[in-house]
Image 1 (cartoon, rainbow, N blue to C red):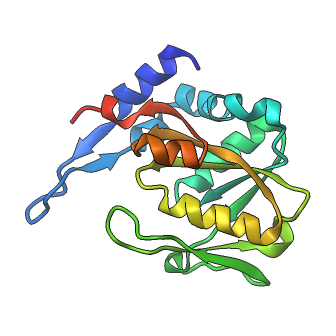
Image 2 (tube, helix red, strand yellow; image 1 turned 45 degrees about the horizontal axis):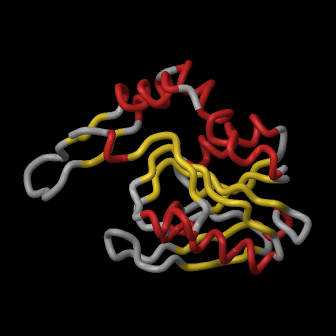
Length: 183
């Protein structure tokens, strides 16, 4: 991956103070979406480590995964499958395969669903997301893939913020280490 992309990701990132009564800063990745050069490079950079494995589909969770997933899928020349969350209020109609994540960094369990007709035993899946801290949602996505008989090749993320054992277990590659996104 070009060092210039990593430098741009760091330069466009911000930590935001959400205001009184909060105990921590919030990540603001919106600068990544605003920069057309970064948008053009994200898909190819995310998929580069997995290209030789020949994924047949990219799977990504709502919300930012709905942007990154199609960028990655387009770079590979494959289709995209969205993982939906009931909290979004926009569940698709038809048969769904569900999984619940283990607790995330906030202690929440997240329910995720994928349309059955879009994921099956012939699929070799690349999971894509913007940020990984605990891997909780990734575990749920891997469970959905297993239930559908699909093979997960690994996960490509923009920012890696998880322990090395989580990254190794989930076969995570990233474009930037979250420690390089200074407050």
